[in-house]
Length: 374
Image (cartoon, rainbow, N blue to C red; front, side, top):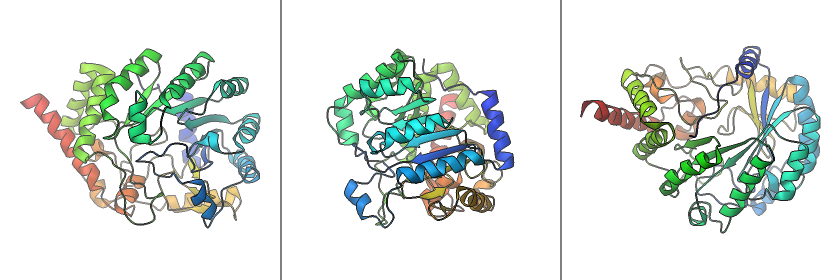
C-alpha cells in the first residue's frame, strides 16, 4: 500500500533547530524553466526562446557553484535540484557531481523521461538522497492530454524501474487535474506494485510566475472537485478505516494537511510557520532568492548580493509577514491550513483570504457530515 514517508526524528530536530536560529539548512536550486513537457497547470515553464529574451539571463554554472559554496558555509545541508526539467539544463551533470562532492544531500525533481540507462549509471556512482518523479498518468494517452507530449510513459516507467533496481530511492508524486483524474486508481495501483510512496496533490497553484498577462488559468479542479478527489485519493491509498478517521477529524474541527510539500507546516496564529524563509529558501533560474517557489515576494537578488546578505534580508522580510486575520480566526483554520504562498497566489497579497480553500473545506465538511449523518 502507498504510504507517506515516515518522519525522521533527527531530521525534524535539525529543521526545528535551524528554524529557531534562522539557519538555511535546506535550499532549492531551480536550474531552468525549460522543459520537454508542456503541462497545462505548470507554474514556471518557459520556452528556450522566452528565456533568451528575458530581461534577466539564466543562471550560469559558475554562479550556482558560487552560491552553493556560500550556502554551505551558512549551514545548507539539504539541496533540491528542480526546474523545469533539470536534466535538460546543459551543465546539469557537471554541477550535480560537484555538489555531491561538496557534501550536500541532494534530491532531484524530474519528470523522469530523460533518465536513460546511462543516466542511471552516473547516478549510481554518485547517488542522490532521492529522485522525485512526477507521474502524470498511467499511459501515453493521458500524458499527451495533460503534458502535450507523445510516447513518454514507457520511458518514465523504465526510469522508475531502473532507478529502483539500482538502489536509488524514488518517490512518486502526482499533480491531479481534470485531464488525468481518470487514471487515479491506476496510479495508486502502479505505486503499490512498485512498492513506492505516491503523493497526490489535488490543489494546483495559480501559475502567477508563468503568466504576465494577468489571465490566470491552469486548468485545475473546482474547489469542490478538489475536495472530492482529495478524499477519494485518501480512501484509495489508506483504506476505509483511515478514511473514516480523517472524516471524523473534519467533523471535530481538525484534520492534518494532505498533499503539502515536506517543507510546509501548519500556520497556527497568522505567522508563517512553515520552514520557508526560516530554514529553507528557493533560488529561481534567473537569480532571485525567495522563501519558496510559489512566492514572488519577498525576494533578494542573489546576483548582486552575497548569499549571506540575501538570506539575512529574506529572513527579515519573512519575519514581518502575517496571513489574513480572517484566516487566523476562522473556525475552519485547522482543517484548511492556508499559507502565505497560497494566499499570495490566490489573491495577489499575503493578507488575502483564499476563497478557493474556503470552498474546498466546506465541501470536505459536507462530505464528512453526509458520511456520518445521512
